[in-house]
Amino acid sequence: MSHKELEEGKKLELDFTKLSKVSTCGEDLLPAVAQDADSGEVLIVGYANQLALDTTIRERMATFWSSSRNELWIKGKTSGDFLEIVEIRVNCEQNSLLYLVRPKGKGSCHTKDKTGTARSGCYYRRLTESGELEFIAGKA
View 1 (spheres, helix red, strand yellow):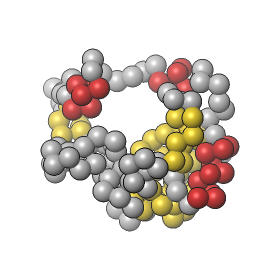
View 2: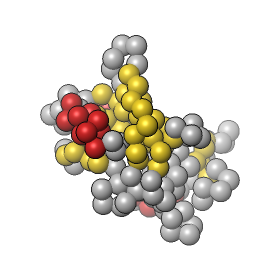
View 3: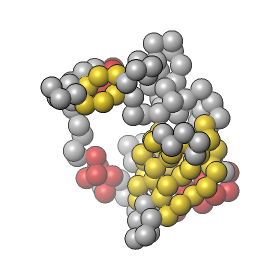
View 4: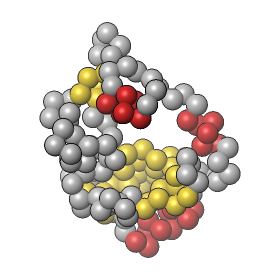
């Protein structure tokens, strides 16, 4: 399946191998969720190692470890769509992070809507009762 079909299509093709890929990337990682501090919208779920967390704290911008590219990923460094850190939270078991952020660009997803603008977040489709994906109103 092409990236275009995966990111814009109606067929559900979940990657249940993602966590095994993450576990074999050679880094100690934990989930890091970026949530819009004002709207509550979940924007991105990524992974962070100590370097990503240290960079997030120092730069005040959401930073992740890209398990697919095996490198530090400061969200927005190439696109300009930064996620400014408002607050960092840690869960009770200290095995995940919540970045409360304020988007500082046009969006936070690498995909674009019909107008060519980055979508506000990565969760722009919903699963229907028939098992297909459909765009949420205003996010196509």
